[in-house]
Length: 369
Ligand code: GTP
Ligand code: MG
Image (tube, rainbow, N blue to C red):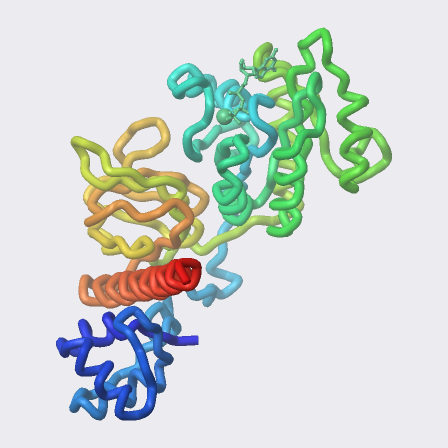
């Protein structure tokens, strides 16, 4: 339900909050400045104080963004987006690293993935887009987002450790997002490796792998020794063929923010995953409550590119602030539209914060009594 704090309403009308409180008092309602009132009451107050009211709903403002209006003949095949998930230290980053033959692990603080990275791997049979997620328990929401942006989840389970809490959590995220799982049993080079135990443990979570008569694809791998990596890529491409993944590249781009930060030299930088359309230099776009004009696009190899098509992860420069990971991004026709959307979202965010702080101060008051 739409609601607003008295302070926010006063700000928007450029009136004093105390006058609103007085007005409500005359109606027989006692309020303080941080109280939240519903939209109907707010409208009444505003009109009584001589303001014209235009109620704007989320759907009015963000309508047309990411609309799924593509005709079947506009759709073209796109690479699968694969999220690597699993328990802490089961070898997700090492596996991705081995797959793209570079070395992310050694560059990470303490070898723990700090945030989601996104990369593409080219194989003779097609391109695969990978998203890495951290296994640490503090990053549940990142894994949930990763699962949502993805076509396939590769569930990494260390053969010497077996199914662990974040393994189970990843299974649940994949199920909630209705995404097929491919099991990668990793670290099979280790003397203590016991892949049979992993398969048996997965049964408890209703994952029945092929070798046990089920239909979940599985591959035994060693990220360290590079064992069966080709096989894993083949299985991913096989699964993706079944999914028949398509998107319309000939439209304004939209997708998801994978990560974003304020870079010392380059300003706000967002890594986005293009999910539809083609993102181009000069495009005006909104990402959460940030917006900007695309000044530069940098691909996962650090090379500047002119555009990014569906399923491509790319770094975007030119935003006015850093959006949040998980935010939606959409190209819009002009700056006015970008301002409208971001101002609306920013206001929403303030209102939610206002409501939350009003609640907590009430709680404080109650507990003080
Ligand atoms: P988080 O991001 O912290 O959740 O960890 P992760 O799953 O990305 O694991 P990471 O790739 O950082 O690997 C953890 C440790 O396992 C590292 O010391 C790796 O060298 C080791 N490791 C990963 N894969 C293998 C493997 O196939 N065999 C062996 N023996 N060790 C491996
Ligand atoms: Mg990692």
